[in-house]
Amino acid sequence: MKRVTSIRLRLALWYFLSLAVVLAIVAVGSWFGVRASLYHAIDDVLGQRLPGVRQFLEEHARMSPEHLNEELNESSNLAVGGGLFRIYDAQGKLIYASAGLFERRVPKPTSSLGERIQFTNEGPSEQPVRLAIQRLEAGGKIFTLEVAEPLRSYNRALDHFEELLWRCLPVLVVLATLGGYWISRRALAPVDRITQDARAISATNLSARLAVPGARDELQRLTLTLNEMLDRIESSFNRVRQFTADASHELRAPLTLIHTAAEFSLRRNRTPEEVLDAMRRVLRESERTTELVNSLLFLARADASTVAFEPSAVNLTASIAELQEQASLLAAARQVIISFQLPAGPVEVAGDRASLARLFLILIDNAIKYTAPGGEVSVELRAETDFALIAIRDTGIGIAKDDLPLIFDRFWRADKVRSREMGGTGLGLSIARRIVDQHGGVVNVDSELGAGSTFFVRLPKA
Image 1 (cartoon, helix red, strand yellow):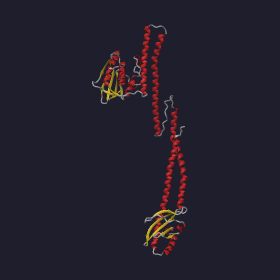
Image 2 (spheres, one colour):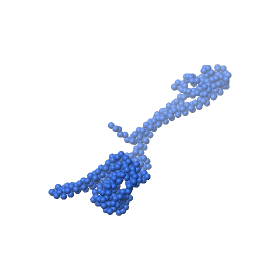
Image 3 (tube, one colour):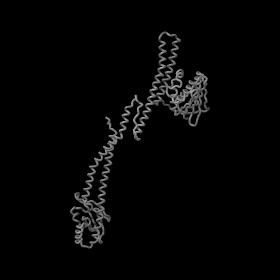
Image 4 (cartoon, rainbow, N blue to C red):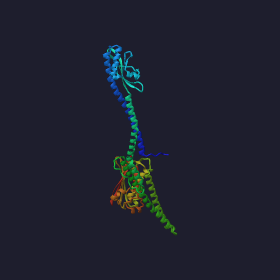
């Protein structure tokens, strides 16, 4: 079973772990820092005591060992060298040890000595001392001096500091974690509001939008992005809804005519001429329905990005020339004059030959349909620097300025009554734009109501 954990709880857990690690590192570092600071202070004190013992030895170096021992006892009582010191001769023989060091049973260090002062911890665990050791010359003789400082009080202070760290560290971690959890709840509260608002949006109220937080932060950008996504979804949903309604309307008309013609033929015995006339109507409407369904399938596949082709070099000059005969037949049927202006040499683009032929035929057929008898349609192809330009001009009814942004919408018609009479489905320009988009090109239109239209198609050259 998959475990579900809230973000705020995970944030608090990570905050706890991170803070615990950081505070543990800080606590250990602080302990070692305090310890080093204490030892540094002790070493400074011991370093200041050595010159006093050295001066004493220089003043009494000529005495006999017995007298020197007596003087050292007196000086120890007077706290020379802090009262805790030892002296060895050049052979390492003990000359004098103060009673305090003797009682603490501090062993003699075994490390080799030089002229520099060395510091070390010696003595039993219950009575440890810090020793400062130096080998020096006084009165022409070599001595080894040891000055000591008890560490018991320092260690006790260090233990108290360690105990304080162990007590305060968990409290600080818990308090900080609770604070982090509270902060994460405050920070993620807008996420809960976004979630609630998003759950309230359904297919019946796609116009609703998420409340945008006032702070200019990541959550505001997320909310704005989600609202933009909802705008696109609503727009797509409305287009699909309109497309479905239009498709249903367009399909209902021919199906009704087919049903009516068949029903009319079966009511009573009909003459062969009447039956043939009904069959012609059925055939005409079934062909129109087939064309509509095929167009819908093409657009549906294009929307799903399943219409793909392997691009190859297409000679537009030859491709458009092959359409001249078919276009001339369409123009003759409408009593429209059509002309072609093609370059002498090839103009090649990368694309699908059949799709491009369909594109040009749609635009030519569209221009002929909306041109009155006696009008003119011209098809021009020319090569530009990076593009091949195809211009299809007509002297037809034109398109109103307000309608220009709508001409590539599905089922839109400039003249709905005439286009239905001429068998148009209202999907031709939508298919044309889809083909142009698939080839990485651009299609534009320049039109004026009553003065004709010009469609410009620019396709990138191969």
